[in-house]
Figure 1 (tube, rainbow, N blue to C red):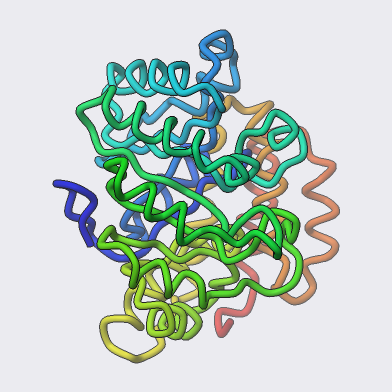
Figure 2 (tube, rainbow, N blue to C red):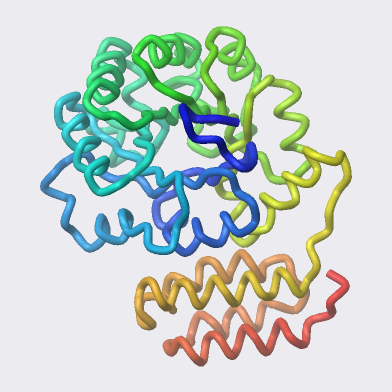
Length: 323
């Protein structure tokens, strides 16, 4: 799969998720052959560029190309200026957010609320594309609500505007993350445009990835929540798409990944903040392991990085390796 001149190593991508798809998560997923990782959403407002949150979100230390920054906003010129700024920092691809369903984003008519205004969509996309020399991609949903599923029209606008690829979450905004993702309209998008298409939503296994790709004709799958606590999912999907056979990731590999993730978090955020952020990842990593309730409760009380690391390492070292 290609995005402009970038040839991706696999048709799998990590979706942008605020507070989750950070530098440590992106680096770990790339080690499991994730073809593309998209950074956490960043406001197009220049006044917010130098906050600690934004500085963390644009820190791509240790990452490999292509580097993707996702921006959100409603002012075409402001979005274009933001794209130029991040291009100047060495970013390889700009992604435009038109899929975030969060209330605080949509009340400003940004994120998935933009889908209600196709004229503004065209203005934003064309203005941003024309402002930079790097590829611009789009992340969107099926529509604002079930009565206005206009993703095919949005995709056609995107292609005309010079967008290089589009990722589509198979829900409307009003669905948030409830119910099941629907893929039929994504298949219609693929027939209507020639751009590479990522399909996103409820893809949580190798077989589901293959089934959705066959159903939609999409070029790749973008994984979001299913990758939290399963950073190796990309390797499992890639293997199945190539061979048609399921690959069981050895427990020792999973253990190494979990412990590496902790180290990356401590290094990136510092020990105090890293310990807190690690808790939400550990809750997912350990959720499906038998007899992990007690260790998870213990982890939530630990304040020191070395103590948290040793606690997790000890639990995993004594866990049966036939998982």
